[in-house]
Amino acid sequence: NAGVTQTPKFRILKIGQSMTLQCTQDMNHNYMYWYRQDPGMGLKLIYYSVGAGITDKGEVPNGYNVSRSTTEDFPLRLELAAPSQTSVYFCASSYRRTGLGSGNTIYFGEGSWLTVV
Amino acid sequence: GQQLNQSPQSMFIQEGEDVSMNCTSSSIFNTWLWYKQDPGEGPVLLIALYKAGELTSNGRLTAQFGITRKDSFLNISASIPSDVGIYFCAGLSGNQFYFGTGTSLTVIP
Image (cartoon, rainbow over the protein chains, first blue to last red):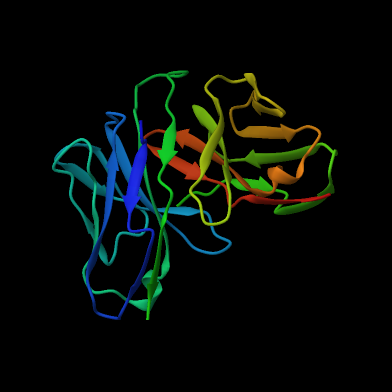
């Protein structure tokens, strides 16, 4: 059981280039998320998805796009990379149930370190 | 977006000492989670709390879900060098998880 797997681990991009961060989970979770983590800051939500075919913006969506064609995969696309997108990106997933005490827990991938120069 | 108030921001302690850290929020949460993040790695779940007043242990770690549902505490007993890392809390409110900014723990042998 691999959990949440994201690739690549490290990437250097030139300004204006495009790339896709891949994320897959094998826990049959319905919710998936993309966060970015900047030094000394907490995790900021970029996009999230509540199920296949459904995505929604988080706190910092500008400059990013996502898709969710399957339950397992949730890729994050950077179309025109900018230095402000230099950060560590984490994909995460959770199996969300309703009600209190219902076992909602979020699991993270190992991170993707992206530098835009 | 809402962030949780986590304190202290950093701690330097001697090996063998106990550690306490906490998270507070102005909002009520249904779930509190505690994670540890090592350098160059993703956050790893330590303890999950789902009921107000719940006290849960994981080895030398103990966490509590505050009665008001607006806070949570993490204690580490008899710290060891491998406890070094960043610990952060997460709370679930409605459809979203919110995160603390982390407590950086340094254990001096």
